[in-house]
Length: 297
Ligand code: GDP
Image 1 (cartoon, rainbow, N blue to C red):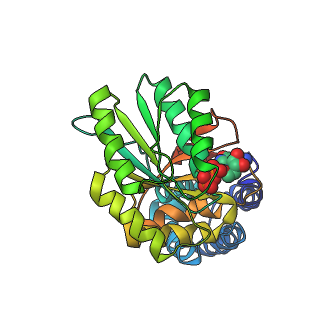
Image 2: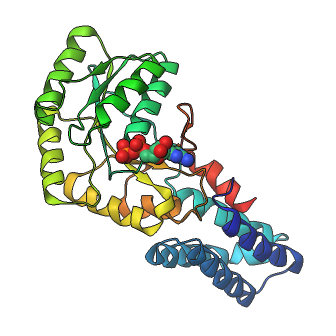
């Protein structure tokens, strides 16, 4: 995977040196932590996140048991692995399920992040798990968005609920949930409008939809290629709307991985899925432990 390539090779070099040393001193650990810090900053990880991370690893690594052990280098690597996993949320976060169906999921995000595509991919994933999702065309402003969702619906072989572009998105969302209840759909995936930047009108509309349908999930779709911008967007959406998780798209692209490593720590909400390509089946559950192993090689 290209995403963590740079970070991965930098860390491997550092750990190679640690392993080669046999017994470690506090200074060896400090030196290694300096290198880890630089490697993470170079991978575009949020600087506050880097600071806390390195401090935590350093504290654990200079603990007496580690330095006295027969394989201190290995132990330090294990600590970094544990803490990277923790940083990304520890365990895999599943999509919520309402006590009584349907489970309502609002898909939000900036234009171009991959929101509409990801909504289709999520329907595809749910169908594979024998769920019965209803796609809802709630982005009435971008001319092609409704059509795009309908095409995705055909590909996934799932129903798309649309009332055209003359009915308010709040009304569309409410009627869609009613439709889902009547027809036995167990998930309602609402595609909402994006903007180029976070703006008040957009947030107001999203809040109105949220209040009208009280979704179990508000998933923010963010483009991992935009690095720290993605993290800022997530922070902003979370403060204003209260998201329940993020979906990082374009992790198949040439991104250094900073967003993947920072977004959970900055927003306090987990990354739930990763978009790994343009195709409909290119959406994977996000596994923090597997990501950490990829980074450490
Ligand atoms: P929206 O404006 O947020 O609804 O964005 P779209 O769903 O229209 O997606 C914008 C572009 O990003 C499209 O060309 C998608 O094919 C592409 N895209 C979405 N997700 C991914 C992904 O995970 N990987 C790659 N490589 N492209 C993606």
